[in-house]
Length: 275
Ligand code: SF4
Image 1 (cartoon, rainbow, N blue to C red):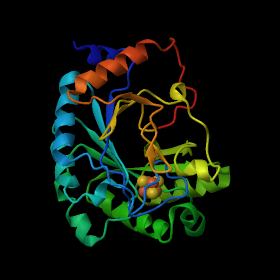
Image 2: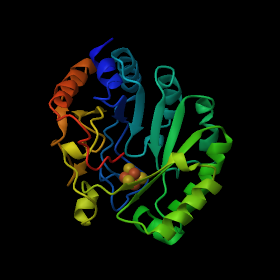
Image 3: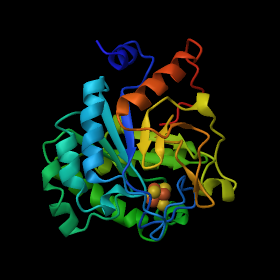
Image 4: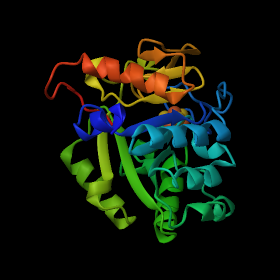
């Protein structure tokens, strides 16, 4: 058994490897960790590199892949690439869910019957409250897209990112996601992290290295401790959670991660458990 497979089996290392597909986005949310926006620097990792990472991750003994951004589905080649990656390991892709017009839904055909799940952001049960931080029409587009994705046979998770939410509002949000075809086990609620644009708006919780799970995350700039690592502030990528600039081969980054996780104290030391 490889060192990674052993660490994953023993629960010392989460099994998922994340990759940042890009950093640009059709939205510009108030709390965005990466200062993403339509004209943000793209920092696209590239289709070939993503497939290469998927293959290396599987060989090293990782068990899952995660794809985030930016908005990954701005990359037109993404569905084909995700389908190919899922031949190596199950894939979770994070998306704002607002690009799925009829034509774009048809382009998702390669994902049907594949081990690819989409995690879509939906923060509030009311359009005005939801769209306040995420932009006009966000709620309508998400609520329109989710049942269509579910009908296509694509697994959808809903992620709710909030400063706080009252029980009654959460109950209405849960009723909504159930109505859209997403069960309770596929709904996560998590705090805003105080990085990126959230810093400028005085939002969110401060997350240090020990507060977030050690999930190897690869970007064009290097390998990071967590997908909450390669955030952007004032146009500059944060490096406080950078592990190494060397991501080829992936084993270099994985070994650096193993050394760091080996230094963590035993026990449940991840305080915020933000995912
Ligand atoms: S939070 Fe997500 S959807 Fe919003 S701007 Fe950032 S990357 Fe785009």
